[in-house]
Amino acid sequence: MAAEHPAPVVRQLRLVVEAADHEAAVAFFRDALGLPEEAAFSGDGDARVVILDAGRATLEIANPAQKRMIDEVEVGRQVAPRIRVAFEVDDTEETTARLVAAGASEIAPPTRTPWDSLNSRLDAPADLQITIFQELRTPDERAGTDGADHRPDGDD
Image (cartoon, rainbow, N blue to C red; front, side, top):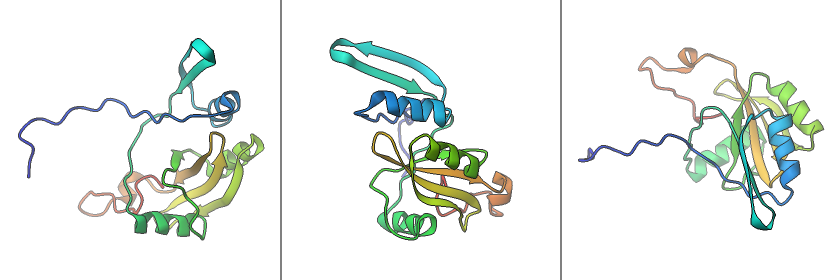
């Protein structure tokens, strides 16, 4: 059923993450991963936030079976919490090595997926589990004849 009123326009997705070790989390995501700092604010009682630009954002909604399948492909077993953050990069192997050197723990090394991306899984600061992924084919190469993207996972 089509909506009778136009849908609101979402201009930005912000994922807000509480990090007990704020400085370490900022250093990891800004300096090691390379997310540019967009803004920083502080307030009373040592309140601090840094907003990092992560490029284009998507919200991927997966059912439990899809989540299990992605874990199986990327890691070989079910490990992901309810929320996992995925970052597309140009070089998964180099980025994974850099992030491990910066303090992340590798859960699974770069692995080629059935949907032609190279994905690694890491435990990162702020208690986040992250996927680092590199698309190995162009969007046109991934799309089916109907123009729809047929990957089983929209970000990896």
